[in-house]
Structure formats: structure tokens, C-alpha cells
Image 1 (tube, rainbow, N blue to C red):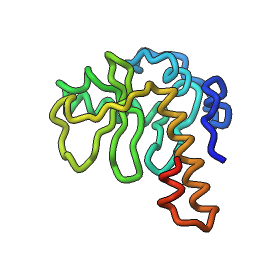
Image 2: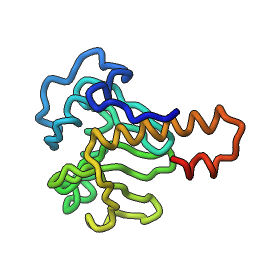
Image 3: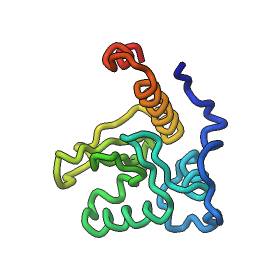
Image 4: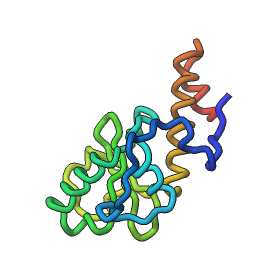
Amino acid sequence: MITVPDINQLFSDFEKRQQPIRSLDKVRISDADYLPFITNYKGMELCADIILFDYETCLQENRYLAEHYPDLAPAVWLIARSGQGDEWCIDRKTMQVLFYHHEKGEYADLHDFLPLPVKFAGFVQLGLVIRQLEALLDAEDIPAAPLQAAY
């Protein structure tokens, strides 16, 4: 059975950092659900398509974005990558999660990102639901297509 994780218990199974990040001056986003994650928890693979960055990787990736794409960097904040090289960001205005498909090549502008109609907490819930589905598909000896269609 697949269940949607309780939003209030979202990070309960995540591995905590040894030392929480105290200064947020380098984190250039104000999402109320993202900040507790990035400052208190290690990066983690929610599922094959969502690998959340830890604090250090997040700063490194966003620094690279700012150096190489200075027109785009003020609009998005990189938060995750997929196992295939796709990227996940937060739109700094709307706090909505955005998806960037790696086959598009170099970033051009914000219109190249596909909006996902959720904010960070909903995105984490989605990743955890996908993880449950992947586990179910791996455990059950049934064809994947009918199970995927059901969910």
C-alpha cells in the first residue's frame, strides 16, 4: 500500500547533520520548508529521479549557476538532481519546484524549466511516494504498467 507521508513528519527518517548550519546568509532562498531541511539534514536520494543536495553541494551548484548563468541564477535555486542528470530547482518568486531536462542542453532562460505545481514539502512527499512505488514494483512479481497506471 502506498501512502502519502504526513507533511509534519516529512523529515523524520532523514539523516541529520552532525552540526546544523547556523548561518543562512549563503542560502539565497526563503522557503519555510526547505530551510529546515538544508540546515539540519544530509542530502538524500528520495528516489532515482530525486537526489536532494546537502548544504555543501547546494552552495557549490548554485555558485556554479551564478558564475556561468548570471541572468538565470537570481530566478532559481538548485536543490536536487536526478540519476540521469536532470535538475530540480525552486523558483525564487513563487517557491514552486521547477524541473530542467538535461537533454535541453545549456540553460537559456526560466521558460526552459517545467513547473511542478508543488512547493518543497510537496516535492519531498512526491519523491517519497515514488520511492514506495519503486519498492512495490521491485518486490511484487507483477507487470509494472498496470501498477504504475493504478498510481
